[in-house]
Length: 297
Image (cartoon, rainbow, N blue to C red; front, top):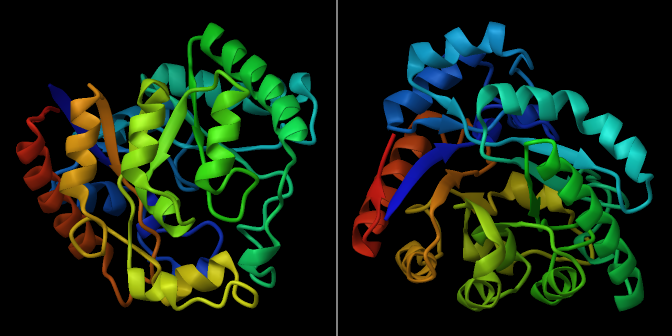
């Protein structure tokens, strides 16, 4: 079985918390990712959305676009409006040969609100989730029809955060799934059970780790998602508390083929991005070998 290893630029530039950003250029970010051994990178705010400009830079470092975030508003928005909002990124990702667009539902989300405690996240009834599921399914079908699939990112502080909420969305939709080990563990879910239940829908994987002591020590009635990030809730595989050998073996057993992307936002002064990238890559190589994956370019 073959797999590819990518990384997200959020370790270098945090879009929600500018103070947790390393002041490096796009080229330096790509250089460090390449030095660490990665061959893919998800897009970030310093990426030009034009392959005529970006392509030569990526080639210089042996990096390809392996995904990238889209802040969706479909929960409260109009399907046609969302098609217009995603059109530029969709065309860019097609030109880049990306595997998918990462769809994150940001309507009603408190993930970027530092004053909003984790316990105040939005919640939907099953009827509301069913209506949402129909909309996101139609949107996913349209994107795939345009030649660029989306992969749905369950996320802390958003409308689909917990394992039960993810189960409901999967029940009431046909949208492909981005499985994020760190977000699911933070939300109290069982990663191995999620893989077992929803493996047929998983099209993209984020190998985000957590520091269990930080997550368990949070006051969710007072502290926000961004507070948790500042405290160091997230890190790379091999530096945190999750058993990525078990997680990757579970994905291998279900036949997952695709990208494994390190996405770990934390303070670059405390956890230097290059050091973290090297550590995460080394751990992924170890667990990939144990699970029977061949890592390819």
